[in-house]
Image (cartoon, rainbow, N blue to C red; front, top):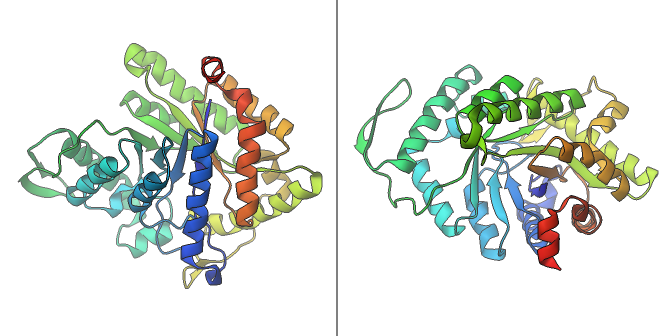
Length: 345
């Protein structure tokens, strides 16, 4: 089982400065690369201070310039917000600049607040996404592409520069039936149970493996990646403090994900939550190293290929760097491929 660090730029205080926020994220990427993490991941969001990353491909190229081996995943880019005729070229350039380390995760958009203000009604996102995805795939694999659809109509064109390699593409989907359908279409899967219970996670992963079984050899290369809010704690009091920070984060996240979308000058309001802090704590991975190993063991048993560790939810930057270091040294070795361990020796 591999691990990725999610570079989700949380920005709860405007006085901190966007330059410092992204420097913190870059520091995490550099450290993750040195410590042997499989990937870092970037989430596209606009107009809000939660998961603040309006230019993931730009940041991907910045990360590539400061790292050597680590993969750079988008988790995810929101296709309905882009024109595929120009975006396909941006993807190719980002793949070239990252020297093949780009893994393109795509999704339809989750926050009505940003989608509405950018002119894409939520009720249209499914249709727009499906059409955009079909066009993007054609533009990345065929030279002359024309289109006559609901949202796109254009005469034959060719994106330039041409792709220099196949670009790995992953689908962001939470619904178990959607995971099954997307896997059968040949996509890698990115999913999360968010603050949901363990049974939802089991259903998501089971749907993926059920589709792979139906596909046979064709499905063998496909992978499933799971995202979880994570942090290291070495005492009960430290765990409680970090859990309280995560609870405040979700008070903002839920506001734009499932709630009314109350945002003041880009800053998402904290709103009351139905879920208690104790219930949230059961679903998050905030734990001591040994507890973390125990919590991750069922993920390995479920044959999850990669876990994205989402560690940015309002804590001090150094705390997160320390947690990344601790996780790499005390947790990751327990889930390493035995063949990799032997090779390293």
